[in-house]
Amino acid sequence: MIKLIKLLLTLAFLVALTLAAWMGYFATTPVTLEQKPYEFTIRHGSSLRTIARQFADEKLVIEPWSFVFLVRLFGKANEIKAGNYLVENDVTPYRLFLIITRGDVTQSQVTFIEGWTFRQMRKALDDNPAVRHDAAKLSDAELLSRIEAHETYPEGLFFPDTYNFGSGMSDISILKRAYRIMQARLDDAWQARATDLPYRSPYEALIMASIIEKETGQASERPMIASVFINRLRIGMRLQTDPTVIYGLGESYDGNIRKRDLLGDTPYNTYTRGGLPPTPIAMPGGESVQAALHPAKSAALYFVAKGNGTHQFSASLAEHNRAVARYQLNR
Image (tube, rainbow, N blue to C red; front, side):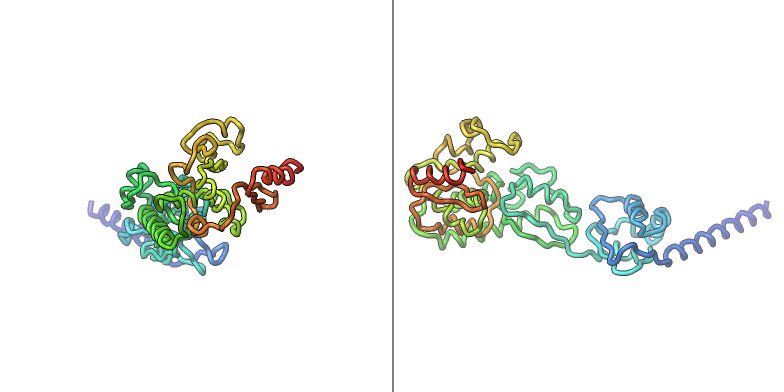
């Protein structure tokens, strides 16, 4: 019996010694990177086993289970930080373990594009692996409450820009920052606005800015586009702008706008309804906000695309019809 116990102890010692030798070799042997520097991403919610398999697939470690054991050996399995990482040189598994448990992440960023809808904006956040997705299951109303917005509809409330953040920041925090920047930009522009504008509130100016954003191909034309729509509002003429109709169609829009779409009444159909639509239709940039509050001085009531990204502006219907014949019908 004593001999058996000694044998088992000897075997256990040899196994432990072999395991220790293997772990020492595994942990300290550099892996040659296929490209330098090498970037990789750990997504939020990834388990240690998932991360180890990812590292093996990306050839950052020679096999996954030894890496799992290494991390557990140091009791750091719950300390791995999600985010984007950059490795400059050949790396050992031990060095890799230190990098991801200390959270030596590169700074992350997300970009919101001028003219995007709120749905596109949320998708950009949902698809970003460095963001903590606290808002994923929130309704629009719940989200607005969490960012302390006083509006009841999220469209157009956020400033389009590139936002840098540390890995693991909540999407709610990023949205709150974008919301506050838009409010500050809108308030500054409102305080310095031109006189005699047909807006009752900064929010109506934001609605106009979103229309200008979607109608403008050339940035230099924003003040003239604004002038046309403001001139129409002043005389009670319908805006008759396709982007609002498209927005009202929602997900049923297939890329083509048809006569029935222009005739079908929705709250956003500015062919069938007078005045501004009830909400913005997209995220306007700073230049569109400025154009809405500082339009060009003109008598223009119409514009038509020339086919080169610019427009021909007209003050009368007869003049506009001639421009349509020249730039649209002949083409």
